[in-house]
Image: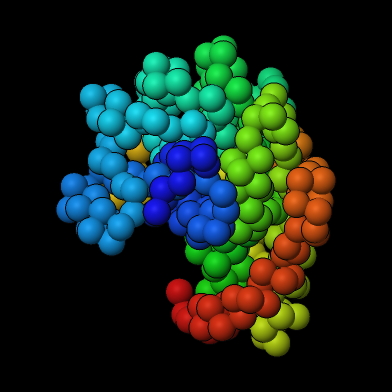
Length: 302
């Protein structure tokens, strides 16, 4: 039941990894949660279940007004295409018209002068949010730990990395959601104008393989591949319908990881204890939680 005394929070991407966890985290908090879907049958189903759900298609700004009416705070997370630029710009404009008072945006872990395209797109969105006059909070997560149990699952007792021996920092998506929940509940009075950096531990491929071995009891080796192999992977991804611009930006990411321009990805910068008053989840802990998935995948032949 909606409480008129509580702020209304709009969650974009509520069916995604972070968004779905965020919705759960907000269930018992003093906010009214509104979710969206671009599937009308899904909206009807959610409404029938008593949820505040509105139809919203990020590619159709005509759908924004009803979804934003009465909203105080917005959690903004867009999909992995170059379309994020237009989607975010038009949504921020609509949020301004609707009187939204706070936008919490999930961006990237990057230096201000990054030249990698999809990192730069996120930074352009951040600057546009700041210029809107709406209070803002930017979350800057490094590599999701979930990549270790999805795109980079070990196969045939082999963990494969595509940036050779370079290190990268990790963050659990559940911790990103927990930070977003805290910021959305507390509101702009406490978190406006803040950049929160979320990179808990830094590992290279061999170290990840060692952690996986210790957790699973298997002997998992690391295969360090480079740009040529990653390019082949991305070309297959594009052939299967991935956004060409975004996919190509991933190739640039690996190129810059290898030549040192993105060495900041190896940094540990962990604001979670300051925000949540507890430690962040560690990589070993995450791998232990997903031991069965790792064992099943590592024993598969490629």
